[in-house]
Image (cartoon, rainbow, N blue to C red; front, side, top):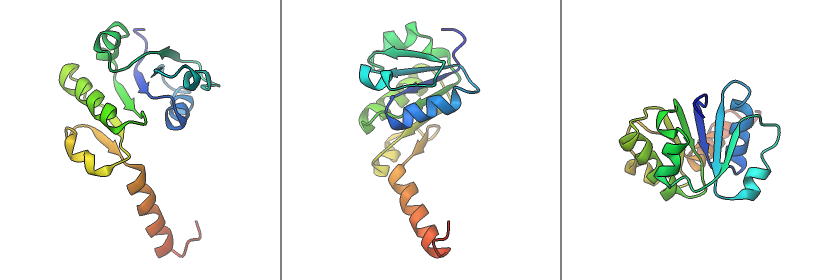
Length: 136
């Protein structure tokens, strides 16, 4: 899969939505160990693999060590942190973004990794809406 430039690990709601949106402009590989989640990925013309993304040999065989962008959005913060380390330290990738449900774990991640913490974003948005009168 040499033409893939973005990998999305996790095909839940976030991964599914990212794949559909980014897939309009980029060549994407989506990886999830849950076949049902992969099957729910509709309106997507990229590549899919039902596999365990923590299997480093699988990642190498599928060119993950050479892609430009990595988005890690599984439901497990610990897996997301582990995979970020694999991509940064083992594969020397610089454009890695992960979702963390627990923002306190962000300090466990290399500073080069971009962390998205939905709880913090929601809290910030609520507070901003209240300050602005909630008209948005």
